[in-house]
Length: 134
Image (cartoon, rainbow, N blue to C red; front, side):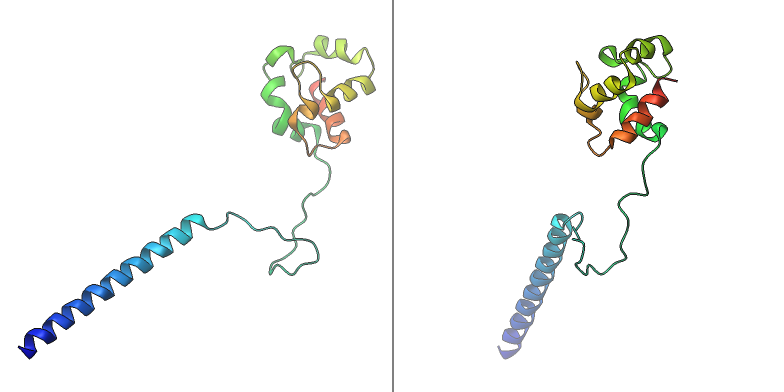
């Protein structure tokens, strides 16, 4: 009888250990799935890593075009002047480069403000217009 009780106690202990191990493994999987994708480090805080510059300087017109403008200006979406279409760009630039740049900054017709390149500076947008209008 004592042997049977000892065996039952051993089996119960093993079952409980297995259940706890399974629960720990599940909890770890959940923690892995819901962990943050990134962390924000505010200047002045010690975040445990090297400081990385957010920008290396203004982007070229080619880089801005590739990142933000090509989606519409490569194929002329909603009447957008295509890159390299000199006649279409001359028509817009006839109003003056500053007016064309102002339209790019504030948006015009189907083009949203800054062509949705909200981190583009005015100089970068200017370079993109010059690149596209060549």
